[in-house]
Image 1 (cartoon, one colour):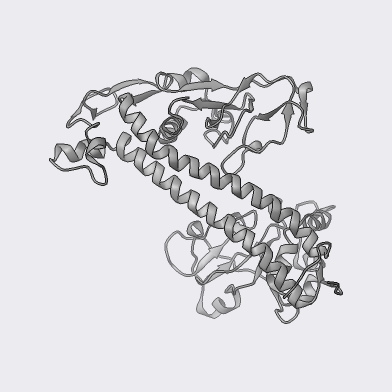
Image 2 (spheres, rainbow, N blue to C red):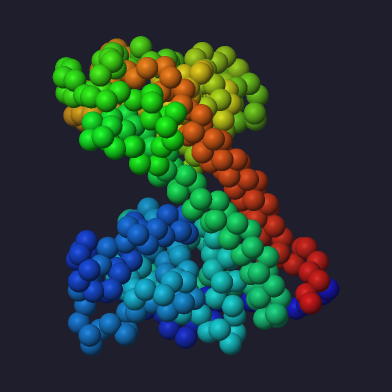
Length: 417
């Protein structure tokens, strides 16, 4: 169907444009939630990590966010980053954010926000910042962004289509967070806190564990160089349980961005939410990751960050792979459980790093093979589900991101019922 598209500036379709409140963030519940620039990542906010702030009652209503409000970062490298508020908990926003309150009689706020997640918005922000001594843009400048508005019923339909995809992505992400918490909790209970052993020492059946699994754990703890460990278990090196493959960067002349060769991973630039993201390739790969390896940063301020390999990648010198062909889930959670202790061993105050020997010789508790195999049979399934959800999210994100500009421009014919 055909329809006319009206173009108005962002400021023309808003009933209010205002800067936020200046206060100190507080982890205690001393007032409403206090949304900051750093809380907004890719248009998403994890409200569980957002702090609180004190604010006088006289200033609360003025700074309180309402559903549909769009807040935009106005300073620093995050200039232009934005978020549409859709929560119920009382929340105010920092003065480094600008709130655009869209007139819902003119436009669907969600439809407007979708345009502020497109390449056209980021190009506009980049132009707005150019020539400035310090990156940033004020409300007047950002308010000049041109918003394309079809009839309201078309806006609503576009929002419905995109929201369906986004909701499924959010559900998968939430599910993965729960699965990850479950996997980490099981590892910690079995191999760090030794809960099944302690239960048996007290003459109790280990909680949530069948008799066959419980029989794999001894009934007492003994002294070791790492403290008390289950009887019959040993202390060994990390490399006695897993393979540690240190990366080695190919020559720069072998790099390309046309997909020729093997995708290269050299650090968090190539890290996605769960898997690596191929951005650069090499025709002369050196060291390789395998499917289900844990790829870990070993150099710089991001040392310790990790993703799970979903195939073969060339490992640059900025990363290593933690691998166990038989028990990849156990290898991954063993490393994660020791991460804080390993970070203490990073060398170099200005440029922390791990060497191969540091990682390989790190002392860990070594359980019997039967315990590792049982953990793998339980948690390996959780890891497979996480990988499946991640792959689905990647496909849904590509679909959403390809549909969005076509829906906004009217390139795709809409059959609005």
